[in-house]
Length: 256
Image 1: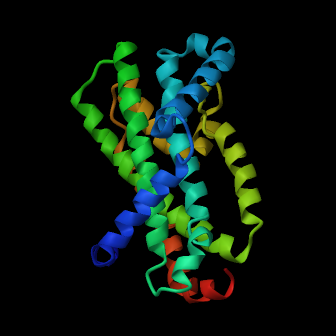
Image 2: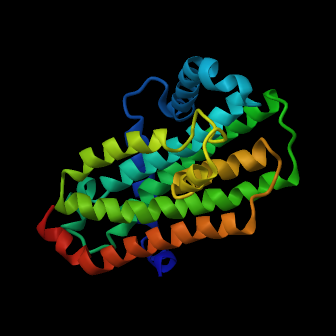
Image 3: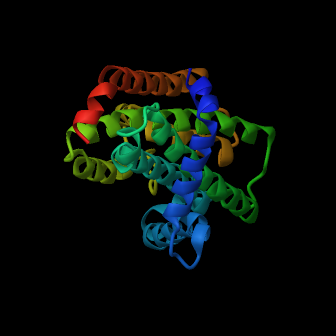
């Protein structure tokens, strides 16, 4: 259904993506270079700060950090922009009858492009760090697709909540800060008990990060149950997001 809608409103959708991409870098000197430079600067700061405390016993620590920063940055940017997608386009859908989730999807395409640019740099770093490329790298498509769908589902939930409760933007900002520390971006969970390590698997973002590290650093494929757990998280969040939009999308007009 969504594919048919995108085809029907293809021109509008493409223009929304172009607008979102241009708007992000409007009046910046470096333009879209910031898509790559921003995560690299974050990586540099994290490596400078955390290497002394956590990186001495972790092989390929730069890549270890990059995996975490790459995934979390994409998740954070996508959900933040998705949350504001309805409110920032209220002037359009209050005048024209179009599917409101198109605005969310356009934001996700824009953040996916940014992620793709950073992913290329990540692969260059892998070469510099003498990471051996194998056929298993093709399996990275699985967590990327899952994360994209997860971001869309969460964006559906957050954008709807933001229409009714403006406070959600502040709560989400605090939650993202907490989630960053709970996603083992700059440390390893090996020092914790088995029970605690299992609790980390309740964090979907950690699952995506862990998958990348298993493939890139450890050159091993996660188990079937790991794949199923990731798919379950995506299905639940996407299902809840679609349900909320289907039930409340007509009420959005009265709250924007």
